[in-house]
Length: 516
Image (cartoon, rainbow, N blue to C red; front, side, top):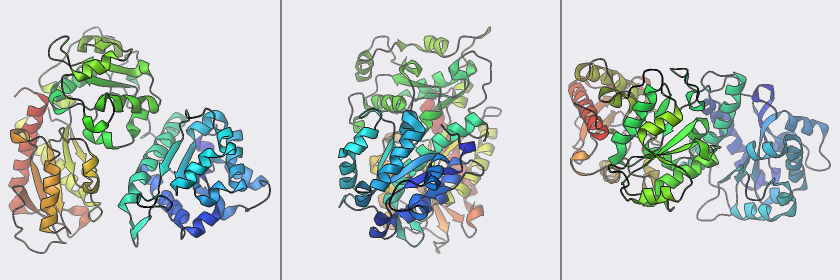
């Protein structure tokens, strides 16, 4: 198949021009947003443009040489399915030519399908011409995404909520498409050496293992297993592997990071399985299926026995027993993923805290969508000062989760029990809306004394009062937001921001079981 570096177009977008007209330019708006956002998500220099077949090609007859050349010059194909697409012989010819040119693998890996209408998508799937193109019925890797309205699935979701403002309902499937497309672009670009950012992390040791060239992911586990997750991360890092721990937010995404990892470790413990996953194995099965879907094999999926007592019964252990995979203790897992060096040592205590990142979730909403970055920069600087005082020489890495709290989607999120701190924004929302948001967020956090500390960033402007009211028990800190690129906490609140980060530090150590 054609590499991105040899492609004239990032994607050939196939659609029926009549669908664009009938939907008041929905396809054109969709393509405009894809062209605008994809380069920023993929972070690949000089990403080739998109080619819209409805704008540049004929509408009848046989495929022209020019159109064939444009398909052949594209890295991928994206089809937009509406009522007219289903009945267009021309669109089916474009798709058949893509299949002929790219082969079975290209049809599986380079084809993206956007459905404007659920009835249209079902009608297309039932067509003999469509079924003849599928390499294996039901086994393809093509990404299907529904962009139709829940209330009337015949029509597409509005791209814009207002002039220049992308609709939140459109943004959800659009983000999934962006992440998946970007992951495939990055994988090809990394192989071709186009971008350093797409390259896998450089190993810190020359361990002869496939896992040494790409990160090993420690799958999400319940809060009670945070110490075990930190210990396995520290032990594998000690063997010279690049290791990353997965936060709860991954369960509400398309698991795009899985495609870039070498191995996935799931913790089998005595904690309850996440019922919200709606599958027998809960959060474990959800992650296993995503791993296999993203191209990971069973040989790169590992089960860690994290039960406090050997052989102790649990729902997770019952699930593990149903698989043909070994349930390994930590030393055996380390030996499988990375044979021990001449001097092998498992470092506990401070190294555990260093291997498990500190997570502060910062709200990012449609009104203040860019402010988290400036807030994060200030938090990062203050965090370094706090750690220099409390933990000289061993600062735990700080991970900011700006999209960890999309409030309109929070009901679908699992518990945020890996949060060490939370920052909410009080900009354009009313005090009543803020209280409702706080209640919703607190319902996702562990209760009692174990609850993560939280603060509210009171943004001036758009707020005008210099004396904000208390926010339901959360500390309200005032921030000068006149320059969105340089948001700064007021001098009178700097000690309160430091106190919040000190609480975050102690919450993290308690959550991961790090020594005092």
